[in-house]
Image (cartoon, rainbow, N blue to C red; front, top):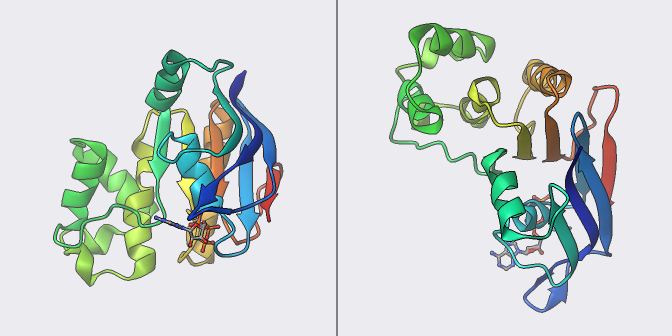
Length: 200
Ligand SMILES: Nc1ncnc2c1ncn2[C@@H]1O[C@H](COP(=O)(O)OP(=O)(O)OP(=O)(O)O)[C@@H](O)[C@H]1O
């Protein structure tokens, strides 16, 4: 099933065209990795797909359609984790997890913090965490969401190799369940199949 169809997309910022036109489709069960130099426009592409940034040329079709209704249906299925994570420094890990994911049962909470090796900092303020630990707090949503389309901006930046494997495991499980992922990264992925879009 076609989730997203991007055709000859162009984006301008401050009257400057960021990259050569980009075309790709995102299907159910697929991962798209967007790569390219710093400032090439990777995050801008994700923001445009979410409808938060105007495009200057080309088109983005959602669930096979151009209508507002198909965009709205698409958005309902999206989990977006941005570059800056959305984790609040003044709240504890437990409080952030609740704020980002809604009320959690104790067993859900314990399972996800153990998986992400955050069990020892559950009651700590997030301002006391390292960049990688904060990233893990934001990424907990990968195990808690019911959204089928994951839009992830640099999900493995700041993670060590065990963190990267944990996240790649979540991506693979998500694909097996029929989900789809579009993500930016500078890192090499170790998962077997994905489409790569190079922005330049
Ligand atoms: N809010 C903004 N207003 C105007 N220009 C912006 C804004 N945010 C980013 N830009 C510009 O748009 C260009 C693309 O930025 P973008 O964040 O999409 O790049 P990126 O490929 O994701 O970079 P990185 O790898 O460093 O995260 C950059 O040249 C940047 O200066």
